[in-house]
Image (cartoon, rainbow, N blue to C red):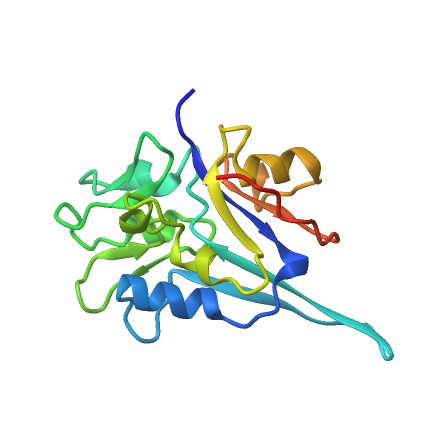
Length: 191
């Protein structure tokens, strides 16, 4: 079975420390004022003394059917065989069609290169057998990445054991980030 990379994000484990964003910026030389990943806040929920806040980390969804790829006039936006969606800089003309097409707002125009920029799941790290920078640095182990088609991967074990949701699933993009809410699962052993 082919490799299909993706993420599981456990929202109850996120403490909004922003270590994932800092690590990504440092690893991928992301320009100041831009980000390849993020943490969104629900704001304060409930009434005193029973209040809470939910944090939702995110990044490119590495979709099964990425609209950013289909609108790219040069073929710079591509979906690799392992499911990772990338931008080939040498082909990008900076038209921003892919940025507009992404329903997750996961791309930006890099002011230094004039090209589209986005999460690559830290391909340079994966090729060395390392986890993406955001996963490695996550203090709460909220972010997990791996092969969604491998039943022994951490992500597959989590998806099999806990209820998940996907963002904007109804638009047909086939997002490959699965969110686990309202539980604090143990992180299983796996690759």
